[in-house]
Length: 365
Length: 143
Image (cartoon, rainbow over all chains, first blue to last red; front, side, top):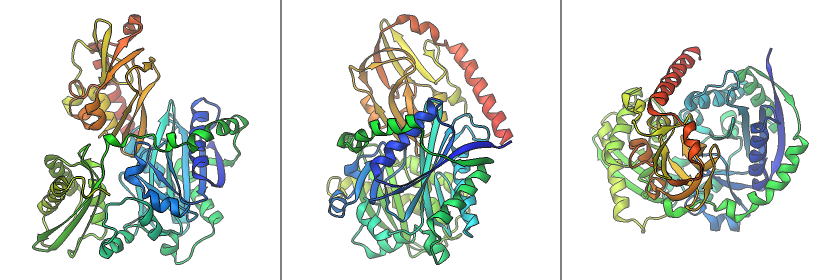
């Protein structure tokens, strides 16, 4: 007999309300009051969300957001900054850790969670795939990112699906690993994401998308979904938690002194063409926060450069670790670029990191 | 799994959330074990309570993030925080690299020495880790 999960569709809400509700449902589940839950969420007005441990100052173009009425808030989950408007649909899984069929290790769990979205997208005629660690891609381009957290014996894993996406506004709202005055980099970045409207040539209605995703999750998790509502205790807790999630103390809770963020862009010549490596570095913590790799080379299979970028994201910026990361990547990925060797990426990345060190304080974004 | 992840030094006390406790009089240093850091993976962020805070056994004393996942740090014993390791807050990867040395997390003044009796000695923890590893292998086979 299939396990029955609660299905919540809370509709468009301000960022603070949605973030508070995440905490409320997770608490309710952790206390044994709620049952496993699938929630769909939407955001209105548009907002920028940062990951739990991120600092607003380092991740968000605050002035632009202020001028355009874009809210800023912080998630209780991990991961990076993202822009959400009415063209995104959020999906969330709240479950007990020992739920039958849910893997204990994160990698397998992420894959299963994303499998729900992949199965749902297939029902819309979209062929998607999971890209480790936490993304779903279509035609080699990102359509959904995700992250999670836990509380006691319960966890929350959530992500967003790009349905009809305003890439230009996203680029203006977020601090990204690109030079925003470089049209070529912007064009390249634009090609890294894709939305349902672009894939299908039209946009299915939101109810149709929700139904497909819900069926996808039900199939992937082998569960039944029963439409439900918030319980009374959840509504009370939501009311109590909301002021905290609206407060500057919550939104700006992280200490940027322990983090850093600087952009570095370098070109590296190879036999097969030039590589342009653009990295966002956290020099305080010796991390490559994210990277965009472009150039006039040809990589096979198509999209493999995005896999390489995903492997580099959040990795150590120490040269010996970069070499290790690249070796691990090339050992399991059959990426071929005529005239470009793995060592070229190593040299380009090291050069970008060294350049950032030379100009620390000047290149801060 | 490499032997390094099974490293369990003698002379420390351990709990089932994979923390080690090194006692010196009424003070104790606390950190994640080699197995603990291995199960978490590459640690990206760490946020700790401030010195002076009271941490209670079984309750959170900070948060930790790896692979887009935020988890809670759960205190193995009760006490008052004397100081935190600012180095690992700035560079949490030190926990991965040297969990029993440079990767220590915080020092506390113990409130209840009796709580130490509830912790495991190295032999017992080593056996518990082996059980966890065996269980993981069985689960992998079942997926």
